[in-house]
Image (cartoon, rainbow, N blue to C red; front, side):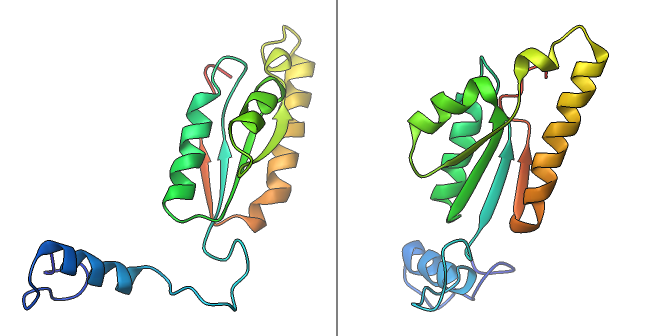
Amino acid sequence: FGSSFGPDCSGMSGQHACVRQTLKTVLPALSGQTRKGQAGRVGIIGGSDHYTGAPYYTALGALRCGSELVTIFTAEEAAVPLKCYSPELMVLPVYSTKTMFSASTELREAEVARMVSAITDFLPRLHCLVVGPGLGRC
């Protein structure tokens, strides 16, 4: 610890003191002046009818790392299970797995357009976007 990352810890006794000092320099100070979401807003595009755990654990990791608002953009079939996992998460169903696997090219293209439109509207509100956990073969 010390050298090129964070403060110089050479005069400190023990790694815990150095880690504590490093965290103080990296993490923003909490004050009564901030609003929910200022410390991090993360969007996750993922999940399908068979894979709900991957976007959930990705969202949980984002919350544990300090993000205050996490939105999962997911399949309609995965939305209810994801909402049941945690009340802290915002879950928006933006596509249908059935339609994505449809034989009709027109249906698939319309579904992709609907998904892109829903997510694009949200992008200005996000600090970070994670793509892929639990998408399967969509």
